[in-house]
Image 1 (cartoon, rainbow, N blue to C red):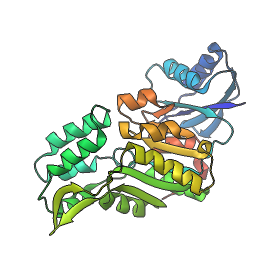
Image 2: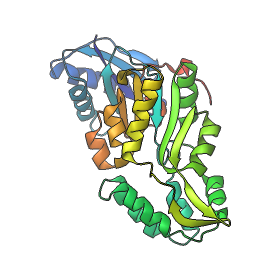
Image 3: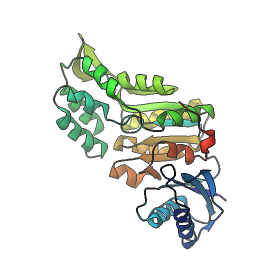
Image 4: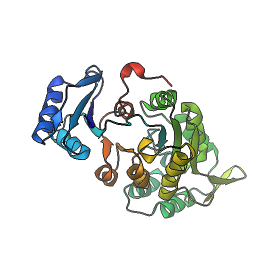
Length: 297
C-alpha cells in the first residue's frame, strides 16, 4: 500500500468504531484500505490505503470523525521514519511563548502577547514584530530571563520525541524565532543535537532592547532545514519539520513530513499534516513507531 493514514487519540480513547468510520470514509473516497495495524492499543493505529491522495484521505478522515479529538495524518508508506527533525520551540517544544513570559516581569505581557499573536498568525512581519517587542523590554534585568526559565515547561511528548528519533539515527535541531538563552537550555535538557535562534543583547545585566543581527526568521528556519539535510546527505523527503506559527510555514512546506502542531489558523490551513488534539507523540506514530519502541528522554 503506497500510503498510510495514522489516527492518534489520547491513551485509551481511540474507539475501534471511529477507526471503522475512517476506513469507510477512505472507501467512499475511492481508496482501497487495508487492515488496521495498531501501534498502541486504543491510542494509535495505521490504516494503509492506495488509490487516493494523502491530503484528501486525511481530510476525509477528519470529516468522518465528526469533531472527535482524534488526529489524522496521512503520508507515503515509503520512507516514513525521518532522519532529520527541525522543531520550533515556543508553543511547540515548550508550552509557552517565552518572550511573552519575559514581558510579564516588565508589566507588559498583554501588550507584547498581542503583538506575538498577530505575528504568529502572519499579520505582521516577523522581524519587525520581534524588534518592536524586544525594544519594549529595554532596561529589564536578566533576572527576568532566569525567572522565566524556571517556570518554562516542556510540551508533553517532547522528550520522548527527541530521544526516540535520535535512537533511530535522526539528527534533531531546535530552530526558534525566540532566544538562545532558552534554546540552549531546552536543547541541553531534551538532547537536541543543534539549536539556532536569536540572541538578546545584554549590557550591565540588563536587556538593551535589541537583538543581534541578522534576525533568525522564517527564511532562516527554512535555510536551517535545507542546510542540515545537505550536511547529513539527506533528501528533503527524509526530513520532519514541526511548528505552530507563520514563521514556520516555509520549513513545514519544504519538509518531507511538515506538521502544524496546535497551530495558528493560517498554519493549520496550509500544512499537509496537522496535530490539533494530541501531543508530540503523534509525530512518532505518524512515522510508524510503535509505543513499545519509544525511548524516554
